[in-house]
Image 1 (cartoon, rainbow, N blue to C red):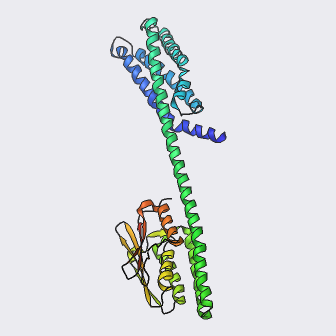
Image 2 (spheres, rainbow, N blue to C red; image 1 turned 90 degrees about the vertical axis):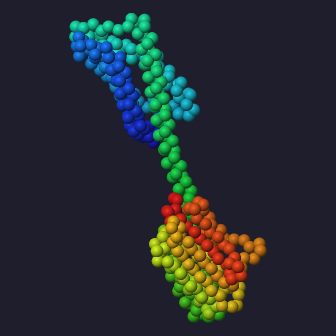
Length: 363
């Protein structure tokens, strides 16, 4: 209940106060028009039309002051609208009657005190006319209040929806990163394990580089997005580890354009793609193969490719956990604006292509 009270107070102050000022101004304009006979008749003292306008304006302002201090408009649900309107229209007869009694009572009192005579339509015609007028204005007021509060609530719900969507995105990304790290670490430790059977010195060097890579990847993973330059540093550390494992059997060429280095991208996005190049092209062949990593900035897109020789996509090929993870992360962050494609490059190898928008990721 305290939270609801604070919210109601904020709603009363922000959207309804300007609305009340607008509605009171409309009443004053109507009173001015109705007093035009008194205003344009030079034989009538100036205080008389001023009295007519001020008595009505003062009554409306006092009513609005108490009305805005009340929480009556927030006690009843806005949806559906019909019960909300019927609930508030119950006050109409009392408000209309009170308006007539107070406004015309004040006018007669002021005129009597000043020694004048307030003339108007006979009561039999005046009361129905003023009752209808007050009813129309009150219905207009309710319509404006309902529209204003509905718009305000819609905006607040929109903000809440954005926050929920952002939390969902962060939750999805956390799940994907948690899925990626054990997968990456398991595969890298397998590399160390295989080297331990062949060359302990090389295995020791790989462990040292693995330590560097893990420190760098942990820092990058906590950042969410990092510059392409840092992502390439992670890739080079991983490539050095794998080149130690497949010494003399693979060359890695790097073609990274300088104007693309500062572009931010999801951390550790490319490692699974490079890992696949080593796994399917180098590990399963005996010849000397090559891997080419390229990145460039083209208008509003960052394009990254990893090409390897020594393998092709066989019939029935399916994406593994690394590529699926990469695709899902891009979908969460960029929607359809980012893509990742794995294609056969004829008989020369496999090409992994990633395209990212330069605009910031969602969430």
